[in-house]
Amino acid sequence: MPKFNSIVTGLAKLPVELAHQIIGDLVVYDVLKLIWYDEPTVVEAIISHPHYKIILGDTETKILETKNLMTSLINLHAQVDFFAQLDHSIYRPRGGPLASNAHALTFDGLRRWTHSDMARDIKSPVKALLVEQFLTTPLDRYVDRSVYPNGVPNPRLCDTVEELEICIAAVKHAKTRMIQRVTDQLYFAATILENNPDLLKRTLDPEQKRRANIAHVVNRMRKTADKIKSRNWRSFTPNEHYMYDFFPVIPYDTTLVELLRNLEKYGLFPGKESQLLNDKEQDTQISHPGSIRNQVDVLMEGMPFYFTDVPFFPIQSVKAVNPPVTDDKGDVFRTKNTSSSGDNSDAYFAVHNVRPSLCYKRPTYPRPLEPCDDREEMWLTSFVDVYRYLENLKKTNSATATA
Image (cartoon, rainbow, N blue to C red):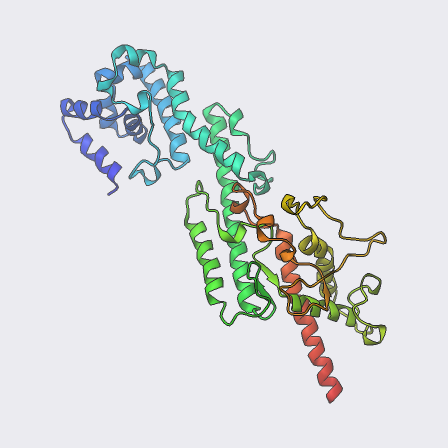
């Protein structure tokens, strides 16, 4: 049986005189929790306690009114999991009447602690938690607008119990959806890397060659996802996979070059934007499925953002915050492979190692807590699907030519 349940059950069995002694030794916050728990015998003992008579009132109407107020206020703490499962309290008041027991407070002190003071003291930590979540997490990005058409309410503007209840529900809803998106994306990154180790690498890996074993990489991604998923919604879990402004998995330089060449060879990449191949090398007579053409569009539309958009880095005196990615004709710029690439002769779209990784590090809050843009996941999926399609097409054409 949970500890708090045991206290309530045991207290209910004691004579009133002995129960009064125990209630007087408990801090006011815990007594309010006992009232919220609503065990009739215990509540009667609290109501008849000399100190709590001052707080609750001396008439039946006043007692009921105050009891309902206390219950609704403490219920806010239950909704934000300040004492989850009723077996221990995560939140403990640090000062004021809530942190003192009745015996330590004078009768005059209790009389001066009005209902509005009580409401302020109980609501204050709830609002502080909600404001922290609101300011450090992009909640509006994850809230379901069909449920909350106006987004997440600003907790600093919420004052009544009803307003705070709506705000708590909206914050928990958005944060839960965000956590789900973070874990889903990490599972996706681990799976696509595990299934395509010949095409993809962990973005932060300095080598441009295939690892002999990637099991520990994908296992770490999945364990991180499991850890985040198991945490309370209030928790912040920054992790290595979202510390930077790029997706945790990226193609190898060589596979990117090969994809671009095959896009041209099989007529999927407009010739005016790239001339990696001579006209004689191109085969534009093949009819491709519409789904593949759509994925090629995703690839080419995302390429400049995914690969060439370099952030401002003051140490290197970069003047442009967002350097241009096209020339005067609208053609996308190409860059040569960097020194970390295996071949410095082929052209390709510059990857993130054109600057030190620290250039791409996100601020502590909120960025390492939230997933990458969904379009990056879509881009990587399109990359793998198109690459495999062209790979199979090349094998089929080779088999036909030798037959």
